[in-house]
Image (cartoon, rainbow, N blue to C red; front, side, top):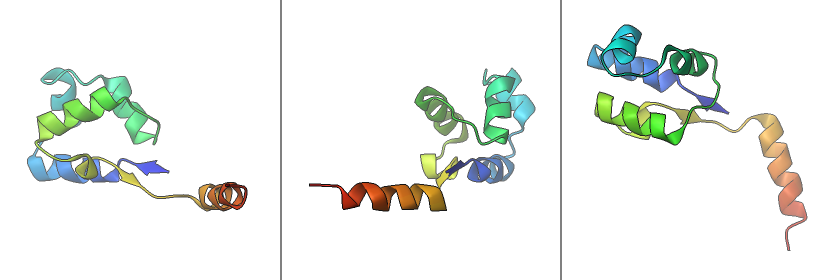
Length: 81
């Protein structure tokens, strides 16, 4: 599961608001909405955010496997050759 919690902390640290991302940097409000709901975004958007915020991808998103994803990986590895 991907969380964008690091983004909000990075924005606060850099003093950048959602308004600025939208109106000064051209990040769509729909993209910010998607991120607010934990929905996927494009790698191009990640690239743009890294450039705007002068940060790394880890400063924007965090991946944590859910219990279901862990179980699925265990099942799949049991059938690996």
